[in-house]
Length: 427
Ligand SMILES: *[C@@H]1O[C@H](CO)[C@@H](O)[C@H](O)[C@H]1NC(C)=O
Ligand SMILES: *[C@@H]1O[C@H](CO)[C@@H](O)[C@H](O)[C@H]1NC(C)=O
Ligand SMILES: *[C@@H]1O[C@H](CO)[C@@H](O)[C@H](O)[C@H]1NC(C)=O
Ligand SMILES: *[C@@H]1O[C@H](CO)[C@@H](O)[C@H](O)[C@H]1NC(C)=O
Image 1 (spheres, protein in one colour):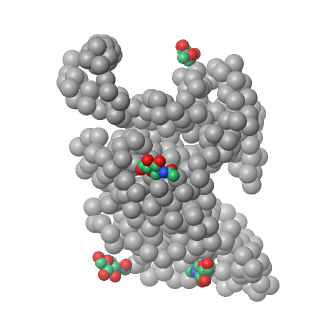
Image 2 (image 1 turned 90 degrees about the horizontal axis):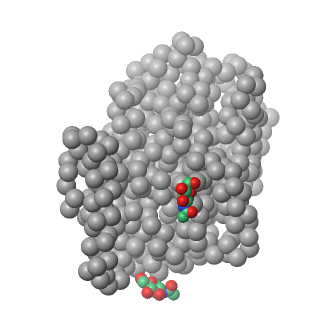
């Protein structure tokens, strides 16, 4: 800590009291007027005084969609020096976490629940990562709360330094752990689901307290604070939220058998048998928000265990398994099969994704959202600063994809916004 002069302290105090007073005036007399409480937590704001290169950006103007600021920011993020300055080597994390207390303090991790409401509603996270440790650490910091529990699946094919760095970070938190069984994740193959299943089993076994399960990947980022997430989940009243829709009965994804050959998924040429129990297969996404009972069913329900075995040689089972289970009678929080219960990714709260072919201008018959302001990877938008204003107006809890090396300022402004919001909701 830098030494502070009494004058500076007094000045800071008056600024805080001043802003608190406006808060008091705006919210009326119900607010708990406790200046020492607010003062105690002021240091948790992300101020940018840690010398992070993104701190020169004006996030307020970016959030408001100010064209000139967005242009300037885009130019900054493509300059060579800036791009170089945001790189953090994996070794940094291994060293910095030798002193966990200092790591958590300097990175401003929350070390206490911000409210009773959040403490009473712990969450369980599964995070599947394979590279870009900085992306992961920023994500973890944004969603970290001591009452929650986090299972991290690091891909078995990740570089040694990535595994060591993530292991070092998790070692600083009693409620963050590495999955007990690591798999090699192959694109579109069963292994992607297995990674989440392994974390589900570990999380289910590790604690009986958590209420909801959320799965993430290293390129996700929250759009809501932990309190907002808790409230959105309570509002589901025990229900689950995910994409789950009809699809044609005969789909090459599960009428043909697939296998992994040299790290890629290939058709075997064999036809598959129909789904067990003639279950209707629904279409959805890899990302879900589900209650504890859904996870218990996935681990124990014999119908689901049979469905899982049947799914192991299909194409992209992550995009139908969760959606199918969500419509299975008896699964806690599930929906009926009737088509009126079909849900799109836009109506579910699990994940905001911009697919290339759904972008367009408002008023066009086909367009679902405005065009991507970043760039595309496998037809999915990697968000840029220009997407922020729109994104923050959506109801989704998380958005995909973010990449610290595509647009670091998008992540910077988002994490700053969320922390400010979390502290502003304190009283
Ligand atoms: C940032 O942008 C806001 C909104 O456009 C503006 O009011 C503020 O003065 C700007 N801050 C700085 C430091 O330029
Ligand atoms: C390792 O971390 C300590 C603080 O924990 C720091 O003082 C030191 O400079 C770091 N060393 C390197 C090589 O980064
Ligand atoms: C993990 O990778 C190692 C090689 O690095 C390999 O020997 C092992 O079989 C892999 N394990 C799994 C479960 O894929
Ligand atoms: C659950 O955890 C206990 C220890 O707490 C362990 O003995 C047991 O094997 C675990 N079960 C599973 C299914 O992981």
